[in-house]
Amino acid sequence: MHAVATQSALSQVTVVVPVGPGDSLTHELRGQLSLLPPAAQVCVVCSDEPGHELIAAGLRSAPGPQWQCLRSAPGRALQQNAGAAAASRSWLWFVHADSLLAPDTLPALAKWIERDIQALAYFDLRFLDDGPALMRLNTAGAWLRSRLLGLPFGDQGLVLPRVLFKALGRFDTTLAGGEDHALVWRARHAGVPLRPLRAPIYTSARKYAERGWGATTGDHLRETWKQARRFSRVERPQ
Image (spheres, rainbow, N blue to C red):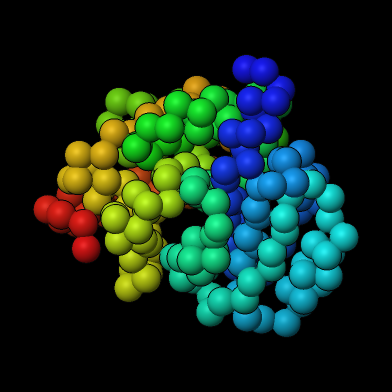
């Protein structure tokens, strides 16, 4: 894809980055998002706890796109909805604060936006080298879950047109967790295509190292199964 076309496509995106309690916007992710063109928008949505004013201060002089730091009550659904409400671009890209991009992440995003398809797209999940060696099994599991079962999760950098996000009812703020899973099921019930962007996005595996690979993986599998049984019963968007 030509560089001019890439910049033009990426200018149509608003990146929404929720930063929850105890989290931070890493220098690495901020540096990677600074490669977006000046016309792009990045909404960093911090929960209303002390310390996040430092993030806002750091963004005032950040290069690249138009940075905006918002405050919201804690909760990923609330924070992501707040970022989407402030979005002024036609495409939304939800990126978790502990994510990192690969060299082909932004080019893949640009190609997808250029196609202008009303669909929910996602990246292939990879894990950083801050967890157990068995994380390669989780990488394979995420590929199977998203590609074969059609269940991408929020840490895969969900991408969709802003009008489609509104039509799907936004993220459900009544849920204690799994708001990304619920949105994917609403998209499925509405007949919205789910499309892989065939490029990676990385996330931290530190919780697997801290809590143990077996226990953490088991918890995720059980929670995914319970959420799938619940959300699959929804027949139409809220």
